[in-house]
Amino acid sequence: MVSFRISRAGLLKKTVSLLSKLPEPDVIVIATFNFLPGQGMSLLASSNDGRVLGAIRIDIKSFNRFFCDRPCSLAVDINHLCTFLNYAGDEHSLHMVTSDSENLYFFHIEDSEGKILLGRSMALNYKVNEMHRDFDQMPNQYVVKFSIPTLVFLNILDEFDHSQAETLTAVVTKEKVEITNGFHEHEYYHEAIFGVVIEGFKEGDHGSYVAKFNWKHLTSLAGTSICKTRGTVWIYPSNGDGSPPVLMCPIGPNAIEGKIIQERSMALNYEVNEVHRDFDQTPHEYVVKVAIPTLDFTKIIRLFANFEFDTIWITVTNKKVTFTYGCHKVVLYNVEQNKLIVEGVKEDDHGSYVAKFSWTHLRSLDDAIRMTRSVWIYPSNGNGSPSVLKCPIDPNPIGTVMYYFLSQDD
Image 1: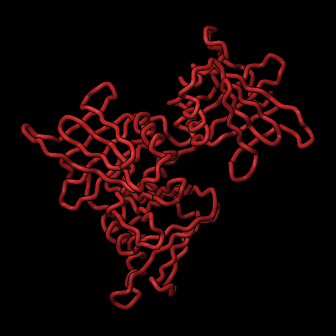
Image 2: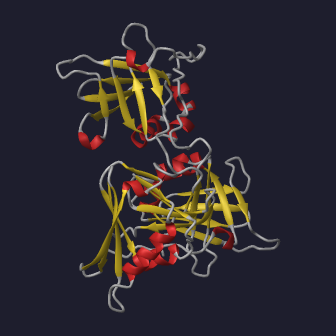
Image 3: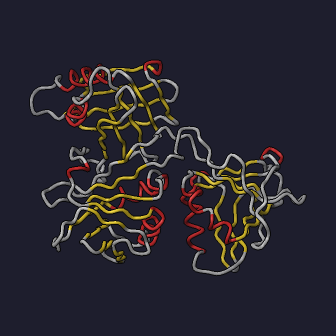
């Protein structure tokens, strides 16, 4: 993930504008941002045939805030970037943040008080070689919008995930929303039990509006911005005039930089009828802990959701983590591609450590778990200490940013 804020947006605007004027007419210029942890950013201008035209470097000291957890590069058509930066004055700040998958990134121009004046998605097209597209139409120019609870929307994405569909389509009428990927379909009525709210239709309007999204783009947002929303996803269907549909994910007040939702783990006793116990044993007193990527953890939990057992067992060894729910098992091996972090089990330790949780209690944590990137589990030491599940909110420099998302048709 990369995030930065720089106060001299006007200076950056002038620099980018100069780079854009270097080539001869009709040459498309690609602006590539190269980020290095602890060093800062360079901006390279190159033609679409690969010729380097110019470059600038911005040292980390020039940023008000700079976060980069690994080297990465992000590219955009420089004309799109110039169009956006033209809105920035010398007194304004520029804020940029990427999604974890690095195929979506977002720019925001802010005034001196941090108020967002203009937001723009510089989204990578899902076909890697195509040019990136940005989005000019603001939400208040849309006729219709509807909201759907985040958990409901994530469950739809999870259910649809097993098909080979390339798009997700939402058809909105005054009475209901139909969401389909060509293989599966869900239908929700306005203000029904699922909490869908439809706005913008006038009296006597019996037409429909369509929002169509690229599946790969949409699922890339599921584990990053969508799961961090304040409980609702907003979708703006196309007006039918060529405007692309938009998906907006307002970040809730808990998703503030450095804030932890659960400073202390409320460890749940595994017997449902017992009182939930507040947990005072500090984590460093535990021998073993394991971090599991949130998307993997929630997929496993949803896989078990169709069965009815009281307890879920999580067994940790130096080679794997095994989830057991009744007669059903899922094994995650401690290898690099699974992105597990197992700490405390020595290489020659062939024993196992067990975390045991009430299924009912675990499911009650769905909202907290979805706000994280990793779920940390501390198995019992075997001395009567309860197992602990912690859901920390990772440092999130996004604040109350609204995410913009492009359709697949742009």
